[in-house]
Image 1 (cartoon, rainbow, N blue to C red):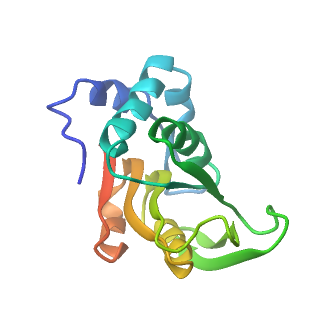
Image 2: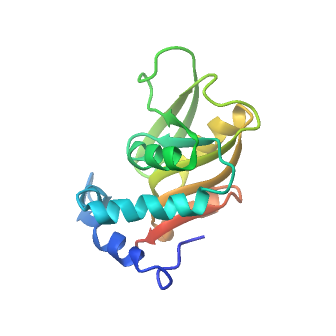
Length: 182
């Protein structure tokens, strides 16, 4: 599900603040740069507010943010809805016991890790990232959470690249996005 751009005037403001950088990080990639969104306090607040409005009454106890840009959007959402924030990190960044999930993304391979014990069985989780492209990262995040017994309620991203069909890889899990980029 995507937010209805015609219903909420905040959507256009958010979309207008996302810069597209051609050929970054390599030729052929149209990089969706959210740093320009973060520079505009109103657009950034509107982004967080739209997610909070959606999730405040869904009994979510865990907001899992994907490194690194999920760390920008996840914590303020978690605080506002009364959930804990769990960082899903790249390898070698978490001390202590971890659980790992390898995955393939649009331009390489990677791995996500989470502390063992950070999420308990039957907790209701929201996965947050800035963007969904091919869906590999979100799938890895959902797999990590489900392996420890959490229920993934939904995935939330600021941007979707629908042409890459990442939504189709999410095993039927709902996806909520604010902006589509073609």
